Length: 419
Image (cartoon, rainbow, N blue to C red; front, side, top):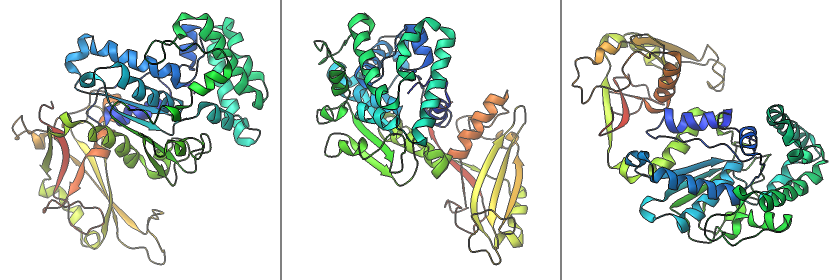
């Protein structure tokens, strides 16, 4: 809620699905974002409207010059954006041709029953006060640019238990006075919402989840989510056409912090790839050997007794090579676990592999990423890609993690026409 296209939550998704994956990505702002409110003079939350907009955008893309570059369309949304994504899955199946519609949908930590979700957000405890403050701060961004839009946000000054009612009343007023907010897609074209109750009823997706959906649809949440209660949202999708997954931890869309960047990236990237058959048939495993002379520090006797725990990579703008760091657990003395990264427990073996090492390879197999980044932004992008896609392996091709093997090469997944 209140997220602009360039906010941090969107940036993380863009990194996972663009920098670290073979997809083109179009980022959409939320209908409650400061930018959307500024540009459209309207504050209208909920997938009932946003889902229609996503499907309309899919139509526009398919009819544009970009069509030649589109193999399949996938929708990924977080939080309130997850609510919109679910509606897009339902409406896409009714309004888009199967061969060019929405292939899959991933709704992360989604609101499902919007009224219940918002009521659970504006509570009287410390959490509710903190979230209310964040919301109010975001709203100020819109009012600083368009102070005349103040009447759209009278609910922000209300007590927590009145905010949901005022948001519903505002939505109904806008849908009755602004043509832009009118329903445009089947089966909603004849729907005329006349009350806040009807607005909230139509923004409870559980009633539509039992209908045929457009492609595979997955909703994922964390059991400890303190913002959108999964018991009142994700769980009401059980026994519907939406597949659900509940993780033990992650709070509200924060899997990066709980499980690490690589695992979080794999969830988003892996799901969309699994629903992209045209990508899977082009997928290939690439391998780049490591020069033996670089591996001398890795073959240190002390290190060879240890267990490989983690390999990380770093690219620097203008540098003709990239840095590789192997973290190896060697001994912990009296410590029970090495995962606190006490210096007594591990050794870091760091070296640089020059891109010239790949010059002798034919162009068809030379790694696309083996070049000096032209600027810091490209260096960060390549670093992110490498840290979730490059895997060190031993001579026999097995991954190093948890073994005492010596690294011999790196492997990564590529695609036949990748350049």
